Amino acid sequence: ASSLGLSVLSMAYGIAANAISKHSISGGRKVGETFVLVLLDVVWVLGAYGLCVASAGLGVWRYAAASLGLVVQYVGTVTMTGTVVIVRREARRKFGCGCGCAIGLMMFVGIPLTLFDAPYMMTEAWYSSLHLVLRRAVLLALSILSVAYLDIVSLPPWVLGVCFGVLALLHTYFSLCFYHSLGHIKFDVRRLLPRVGMWGRQRV
Image (cartoon, rainbow, N blue to C red; front, side, top):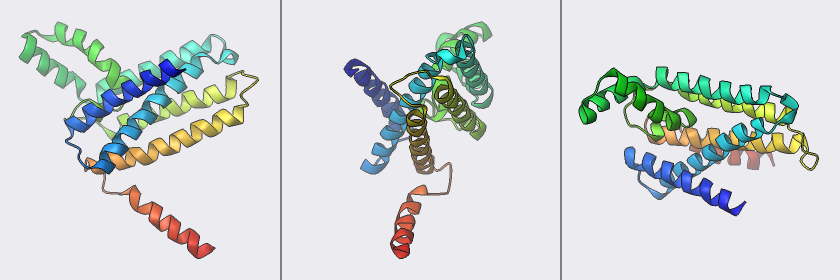
């Protein structure tokens, strides 16, 4: 458990550091929000895919569901993030090779882009918001399958459902903070918390 926790923290730290460097994110609050977002992302990805594969109630379909999720995300990544253009350009610039080499690099580069949001890895604004929505839809679907079919006596389904629900809500909040910091959305979700607190005090 401790080694898994360290691995998750290490992975999240590396991805967050790359995103912070790529987008020149500064300020303790924004840097902290970026790290928390990536940490939640890593936990959600590992939890959704891992528990889906462990859901014995799905039978052989548990492998098919996880594989289908990866395929959908990969296709969405390649078609919605401009990865083809970026990889082909870099292949020509660094290696002097053509389409064949670019396809090989695509298989390698597409893996982290498939599992996580493309802006964590690149700065070019060549990705569609549909890519971000698609990722979250796949993770949500796998989470629902895990809650419905995971057969663990010591872990009631509602507990797992609450955990995934809280994880999804926190992930959504910090995602909105991250993309507002990048200037991709105008809505600042941070302003909602003080307003909700004031509304709660007025109600009391």
